[in-house]
Length: 293
Image (cartoon, rainbow, N blue to C red; front, side, top):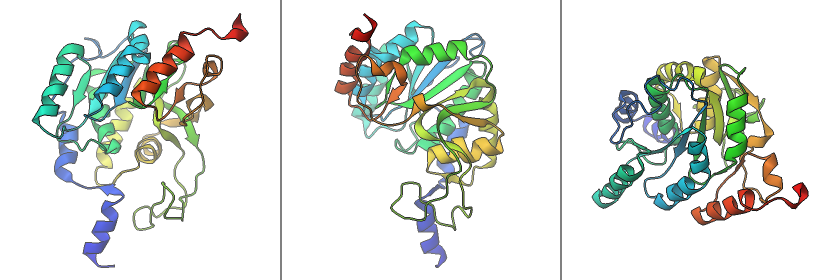
């Protein structure tokens, strides 16, 4: 394989645009929220929610603000949407007007809107600067339906965890050999037989005292940014930073059939439209479960 072809193949799995990567570490946000977790960097705050959103997904953000996001905020949590660059000036003006109204958007306008590994660098940089003393962070996306009641309760009562990521744990996973597998990596990119234990994205919780550890380790891994965000951040980087990963079945990342009884047993359902998120909120939280009556 000649060097040109090898670089093209590696680029499929590794993000290597150093100018964009450097911007991620500079905290050069187009839309920022200075002291976004309060003057004490989140001391006394149980939970911060970072929602990875696409710039164009206004309706998804509105649906979250009206449903599970509103419940989190009512319980004293901070909620922010992290987005990348807009497609044109019209969309950018709309985003800026949206932020004037709601004040909950973090935008890195240099950032490709669909590379979650880069968004995680920006997220950890922001949290390290402004939210380093919070107890828990929930990382999610704008197509997820979250059981805000259960996650809030967990963040308020789970006080003994330290340097920990909680999610749908992939333990002792072999690196797939089949190129059709979404987690396939060729040997010239990742030469090992197994991944470090990682939590399958896009939804996971992590403790506030792991923020700095993950962020500082990311600076060391700057030349090897895998595009598989969950494997890279919660597996490779977390392993080297000595942040433990533990599994919780309630954070399984699947689209589930939800009713007003079974959602008490799960924390997340994935890949929903804004309309579905609004409907599920009514089903799960505004309609009593007949078993309880």
